[in-house]
Image 1 (cartoon, rainbow, N blue to C red):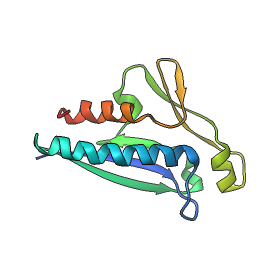
Image 2 (spheres, rainbow, N blue to C red):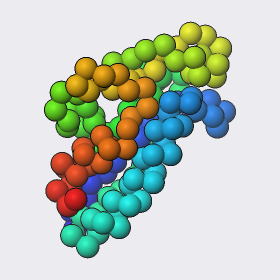
Image 3 (cartoon, rainbow, N blue to C red):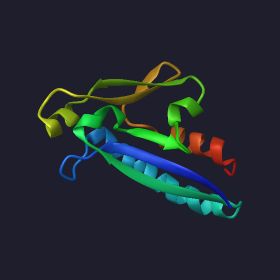
Length: 127
């Protein structure tokens, strides 16, 4: 069975994460569960891991890796960037920036589920 590992990294400060990451997390959990069902019948196992990062690693917060490749490298016209994140700042007590995705010239603070699905399906080739 082919395996596809989806890793989601996000800030964890005493069990809390920022609003952006929380919203991405809700979307990715639901999506991966659905893809696990959809792809299992086609011989592909989708494995989901969640990695909690510290303040020192905040540049990795809201990063999605698919078989080790950042999501933005798997999608056309997509790059990673960052912008000020008040929610991260509330958690850390200082001004912080959080990862964003830029696709077709538009900035996304929360990674849309359809982008995550597209990247996973590109790697898994089962959906």
